[in-house]
Amino acid sequence: MTMQTILIIDDEAAIRDMVGIALEVAGFRCLQAENARDGHALIIDEKPELVLLDWMMPITSGIELLRRLRRDELTEKLPVIMLTAKAEEDNLVQGLEGGADDYITKPFSPRELVARTKAVLRRKQPQMPEEIIHARDLVFDPVSHHVTIGEQTLSMGPTEFRLLGFFLTHQDRVYSRDQILDHVWGGNVYMDERTVDVHIRRLRKALSIADHDQLIQTVRGSGYRFSTRFPG
Image (tube, rainbow, N blue to C red; front, side, top):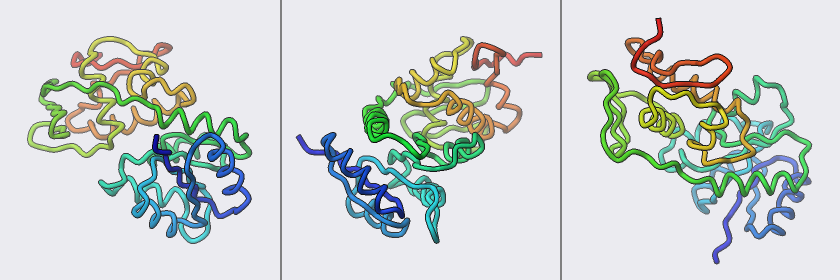
């Protein structure tokens, strides 16, 4: 069985070595880079299955590299876990909005890191609809991976696309954040519920043409619902 490759990008050698040893013991092949430039080159050359990315690095920060990866179709779906000393909620939101799959705050235990790495890697892709779906004048095409409202094509990330696909196939039902995590992220028990709120906000922004953001409704104390019947 081929070992999965994990790339560790961190400017602290001690952190890279500690993480590398823990992951190698767990059966992974590890690569290391001390800055974003070298890390990006390794991503292109080695095509790792997952990247562990430090937030605070000189010259180019981890969050800047993450945004660059998400803008490139070759790396937009590459799983990335942010490693950071920034524990505030605003930083969590910023990391998730930048496209991180998970977020681990330093200091962390090697056991936790390995568990969360495995959880992201085994995440199952949710089952996507196969037919084109219409909701008012919104058209969702899972084959071409296009979403349009009227004549305008919407821009959204892969997570928002999966989230919209889930909502469109489960209309007029209320789902809790935990249930949405299970359906859209594949039951990753280590994912924070606030992840759902971040991506709901991003999806609403993408759907903001002609009030289509109102299709996603917040149900106080329960979760979210997608419905073409606007409340009012």
